[in-house]
Length: 344
Image (cartoon, rainbow, N blue to C red; front, side, top):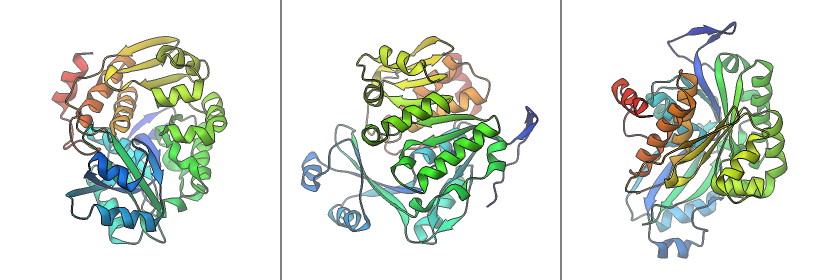
């Protein structure tokens, strides 16, 4: 397994090659616009990610076969790594794909976006995520993890972690073994090598089953936690966004709490930093949280203040919501970045 990147810098006695090293699922996103009637017919809960097997996924694909679909490399943490790269940062990623055409497409797609990718392949079929987008821009995700489920502790490379500023872990990895052990191994190695850990809760449904474990991570291992308001409420038992953020900040050094169109709250060094939302015509919320995380992670690993990073993240999320698809249509230029940062 080899990671390649051109730029290097030395910091804290280590050669730092990567701003962020992500560990997560490898999923090819298959996106399609559907009516509420179609969604009701398929009988899935709107706005929620549901794990399905290959048989169910095949049935869903048959149902939408006459619709226009688009596909791209995805997965929550992978989207964030591509976002970091699109801002001009250095990102690496560990995942598992199968020896199939979809897996080849996935690896090629990430490399083209500038992400150094772990190329170890597994058996079976590469994972897919069917994203059903309704007229209100809400997305309902049906995920068949496929080969992603074989990602294990041995796929996490300590040398790559040692060369990174942050390790980024997605909550989806905690749904089963051995992916859970891979996540815990990455966190363990980060702590061993004085590398910071960022963790995204990923989805409200995960808290039903992993609340205690997530709190244990937040209290003891995580330097930066990402979540949305629904997830924060489920974790803290509070309703008000500021109350949620303060409760989480009692245990986590840094908190990034997204509030949809109302912006976000950052907690850093005991300070509450309110970030305004960006008003856009919402078309598709897929990947908004992932790109928000990319903006924060790029900013704090490249010399921006937390406020500047939040402002960049808000613009990134707004741009994603205003288009179809979970990634930027093209990378940001240095001039575009400077303009956004100057507005903070």
